[in-house]
Image 1 (tube, helix red, strand yellow):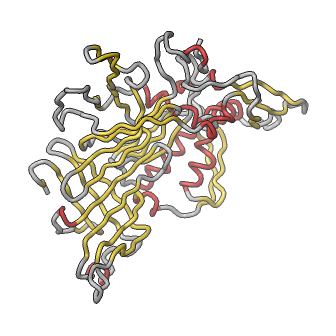
Image 2 (image 1 turned 180 degrees about the vertical axis):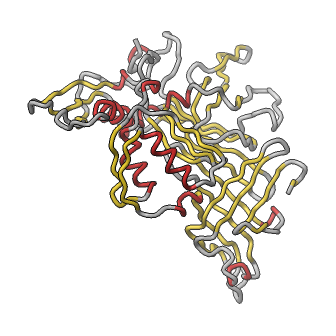
Image 3 (image 1 turned 60 degrees about the horizontal axis):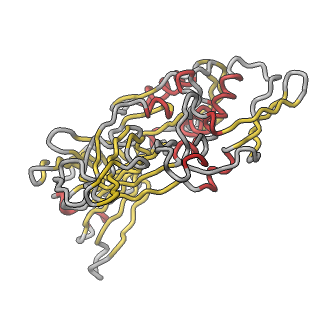
Length: 395
């Protein structure tokens, strides 16, 4: 349904069109590079209580949400995992606002399996995901972890996130971590940070300078909130000892500094830390484990264990709805900074390219917005900035 000659909106419930006008429901579609399942929360007006009485939205029900504009639409299938009545405006009826919490349909398709695979991690993931079907497309980066992998009475979600993902490594990833997630376009992604950051931006969002008139369709930033990753999450990543036993039983201990991730990066990380201080020990596979994938898996363990440190600089931005903005893509952010009223320049710290860490597409019954958290590891600032030389990799 084209609503207000601007938004394309449709709902289906168990593959049947939900014939209710868009002003009678609200929803938010959420995805994140840190979550395997995309999510949604749908609120439906059910003043008569008939939907509730008829089990229309009982747990396990498939709900497909379509949201877009005249040019592009995103459709994603979900399954209800929780439903509740959040208010009761009429005392004599069990009716009101139904709130439905939902996960990507992939969640509902899995059973516990006990299997073994001799293959690359990326091939295992691709073959398992393909066997379910239902995704609009797959975005899978090739890994270098050929070996024997066991799935001991686990769902694929558990197998992927607990065993395969922490070991994933690719020579093209430049020692950056891998991510596995589904987005609000119903695309399955398995790729490294470097692969995501090397993509062309899907949009440029601009915070208007004072006195600038920017239309609501021009990628204007309506609200912006910078935030840094908590140092409590980053503390262990700065200077670790990577330890393992060699085939003779001798302990091997090598320094593992955050400044070496990813390979080839020289721009500063926006944090101050004395890298001479040991912050953690990281246990790797020992050399007496004779497996072909051990060496690359150790590289994968090292990279994936510093994942939080690849998202030190974050910005939450709100913009008019843009269907291209989903997790795992990149954005260009343009933020002004003013020396005086006549000298407005792009911010050195905040302007530039970011990966979309998470996105919310919200429909409030009248209009739609996109809220995205974008992040990156490094900043490009001039040497004249006071703390530049004190930052990690700041020299």
